[in-house]
Length: 164
Image 1: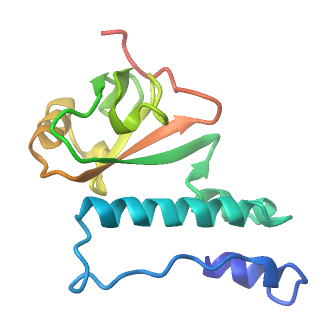
Image 2: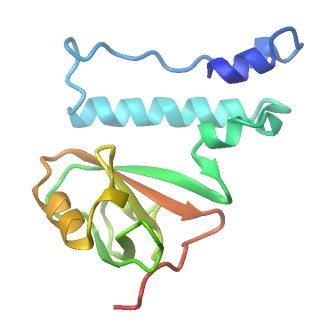
């Protein structure tokens, strides 16, 4: 947000930039509360939609990585609140990432994930430092709610699975 603002400082579009949602202090707000997570997600999504609606913003070099889009990929974050995730993962053929989404069976991921999406982080912990078995174990034992992060090719899934 600061870099986008700095890039448009003095430009007539500066006043059109939306304000980033304010952060809540962790010791005053439970950052694991499903209501808090959903409100934060919705606020950030609204902010990003308004931000990319401002002319020229997407052409600022660091805007796309800020929005989770880089090298024709975007990062999608999903809040999982129940033991059953509504997805099945399989071993990945993508170097440095142990797992990809094999099936989407419903749940919070139904509207945003596709087969082939890469599992990139669990609660911010990079999957690239884990084996497939370690990642699956972490997903099974992490307290709910948790945030799963996925990399997705712009326009659909990555096709990074091995088919089984």
